[in-house]
Length: 196
Image 1 (tube, rainbow, N blue to C red):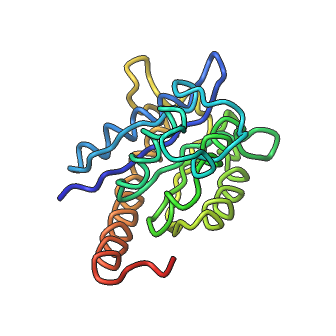
Image 2 (image 1 turned 120 degrees about the vertical axis):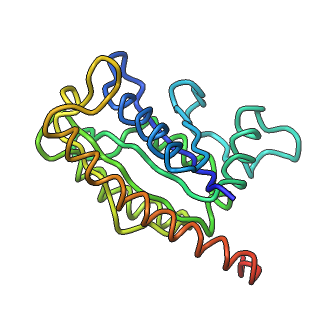
């Protein structure tokens, strides 16, 4: 059975560059036989966190939250595509993830960071590692970091130049790592009921 992978993207900016990276990842995972789906925080447009999904009385959560909770619970793995804002994480992506907690448990997550500069969003990637771990995910060791995001994709959304070539070289190992952990986590969930 193909891995169901949710790819989360969190920029709300009008001239978002990382959306090209998120869309490319959807295509690249699909070409490997996975079942990826892009979850775009801007499209969902969740309100600033007031109540987590679990804090609503049964059946009273906004439909967007209920639908996303179901997708998260039924996913095999997650990919978080994050830009770097002032050495930190994107507020839109952080707000989206904070609406949920137990829904994330016992699945692997992978991080793809990007920025316009040469550090490729690495500081945001490091921050996300601890955030996702705290939220009950196993964060795989393989990461992708894309520098010069505005020059990495051509008008058709295909990787170009040195940064694009680096991305296409890094993706197979990244995807293999995530697939291995997805399989391992799925087998363990089938064998043993999670402890909480």
